[in-house]
Length: 313
Image (tube, rainbow, N blue to C red):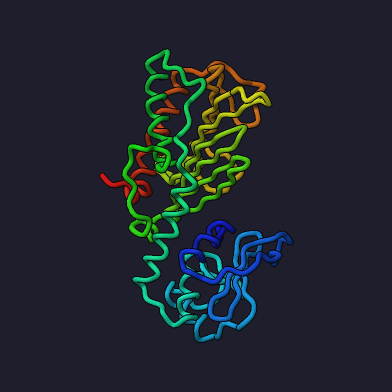
């Protein structure tokens, strides 16, 4: 997913690079941070990667830097042709340019960079649910599960959790986030192989998403689950929706008998298939139970494959 402007700036400040006047980004022409390390200037593209100018980085140093990540040619997660795409990548390259590289140093710098970023980005508590009223046993069960769901999607939003040091989980869980305090806007993605979760928050909506592989009726497939709410121009909630998709074949547009496509409004109690809201009908007990069952599966799989590596128990 690349490296954001904020991530680049904090990483360079933690490293102790010399700050230069802001310059125009290489891809999008607005002012971005610029730093100097051993005569090589690093500045942000304005999109999702870092570029360099000034003293060239030798092939020997680039090959050494790539080798630390098991990369042989530019085009991996950390380095592309003339581009740096990760926090660990820029810290590794900077340390090698100044001939002070060690794994211990990079781990220390990476840990401190993520600690500063996360402490400033995700201090917002997980949201309250506007329409999930526990008026029936199934809605009560759903409400309890959705609270657990929000905590496993955005563990930084639960102040009761003791989160491990970033360096303890970064090799297992990919952490990608963005923040704009003026909007306000926050995004968090946690990824471990085929398992992923996402939290999105802005002034007018919030969303918790997960995607997990699973097996149903002897078929391998994946579950996409979403809990979403939106507001009107007066900041009043207009709806709160649960969306469940189960697909036997990933990225396939052809339906399979085992596929599931179900949306339920927690405000109205109506259920419908995606893009067919005009045919919505009151959700049945069977549909509510389907939501509960697949929500439980999603919670357990994200907990097992992502958040258990992040939270002290």
